[in-house]
Length: 140
Image (cartoon, rainbow, N blue to C red; front, side):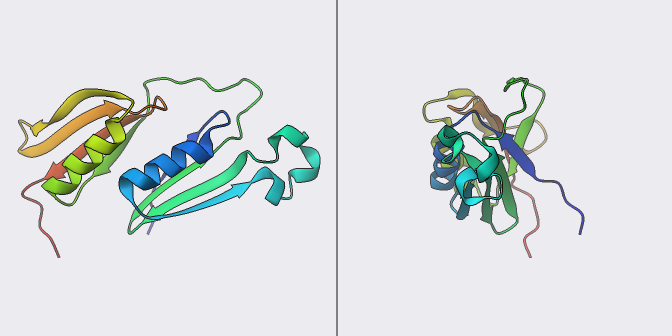
């Protein structure tokens, strides 16, 4: 099955951010530092603890991240959002509360005109999240 996953780039705080997302969303977090990778010999010593690749996995949720920023530096924009389709009303409300902590709760979870619960926020790392729960979705 072909799928697309979100890959976030950070500027030295990938470990902190991905640990935060694990606390919010649950799942298994795998972190690989530059020092543990084949890149270790090619990078300055101060980068050895930076994250070359991380993966947070919970069921079908996969969120990846890295501290590997291009020479142009990290530019945050509003052109990308993380869409989180939730499986229950309790889950959407819990995730919203946790992810918005220290960030900006821009649109609290509420009933939408299309019949779903919806909310959006910007987390404390500047990433924009859209949370959605279709109350009429069929469960297996």
